Length: 325
Image 1 (cartoon, rainbow, N blue to C red):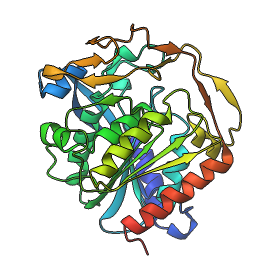
Image 2 (image 1 turned 135 degrees about the vertical axis):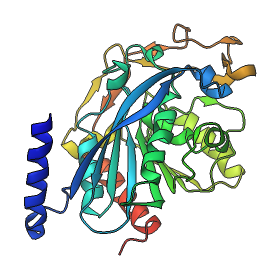
Image 3 (image 1 turned 180 degrees about the vertical axis):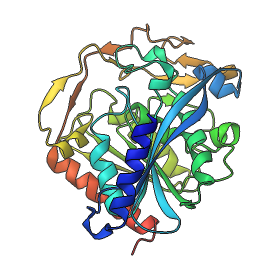
Image 4 (image 1 turned 30 degrees about the horizontal axis):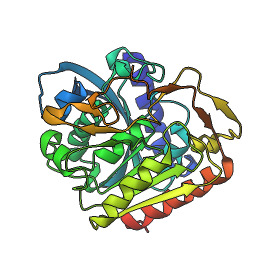
């Protein structure tokens, strides 16, 4: 490992002396971080109980080419962990002069994927990892703490959406800074939390596919309507011919397939009850992934056309929000 770090440092030093030869989508520097976090149940998270299992997760910080303090996009993966779908986004943002911080919330917990058993990790636990990462970035000399945006995909999209809640920030965000915006991709919006319309006064931009049968967009429409009634800055962009994970089209994926044995809560109605207990609203019993509403085998698939449209929409949003020249 030490030899690899030395060789990498030499390579970066050589590249930096000839910056004109470096493709703009490549980072000027890469740093790896051990992030102290906690493994919590959803009930612990919701009740503010920090007596969880200490764990160390990881983050890859790619500092874009440029000088001084730069804007950052934090990226949170979905149920399959950090995958190839992250790469086009990282390269896009780095090419814009935006640094990226990719969180791996699974490896440090001994997980590779949770799609077929979502109970392996609390649905809200990734929000703790996100806030702990924000604490690192808030104190980094190459980061503009006022220009950090959170983006997530599927399970990570759910985390990116609900990390905006004022209540959760007060309970778990000890960084002293707030995200400048939130970009959830195809999140699950099927759970109603106490006070969930009280979100940060920052823009939320949700991207979803109309035929998505993994995390159906209907529940997100309903949540967005409630947020808009509360005068929050939130926009839901729907693509009518795009399945779950449609942005894999940025990798050239254009086919649809069954995500074999993956669990979906598409027919569940979940609400937060007393003491942070999640309740199945149809049965009035505590929710579990053994409930009858849990189904299997949703679809996933890429759409190059709408993936490109989403890429442009996100880039334009960040161009304006970060005041890029």
